[in-house]
Length: 157
Image 1 (spheres, rainbow, N blue to C red):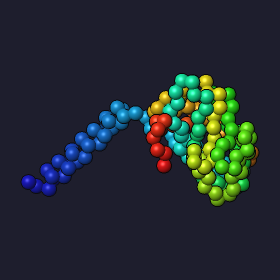
Image 2: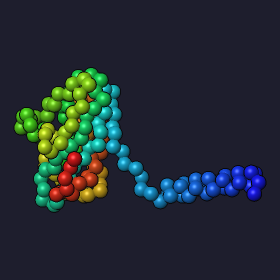
Image 3: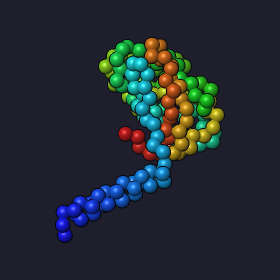
């Protein structure tokens, strides 16, 4: 076989692979956003566990990083819940006043400090996303989505 034939064969193979990959793109589900940015920090992977009918609250975790100036989380709202609070270690009941220091990586997790949505208006279904708005003192408002990616009994790492 001459080099031209091998070159055409390789090109055809690459073309078929590319076409196959593009065809799969239309069949695959859309990628979920897991990063939300504002002027001074990044909100990374907001998540929660699934809930059942009758559950009145849910814990929301996430990571706040890439912090370029001191700030505070001063409010959390969601159409899913009537209110929100900071819970866990060092939290003051009912208050949303969470300091975030420049350069800090703040991991909100059910075993440490977390956000709790109260007065749930509907159950959170596994595999679904729900809107969440975070209000920062300096950075302003960050609209994010809570990814319900854990069952009630699944370990969160």
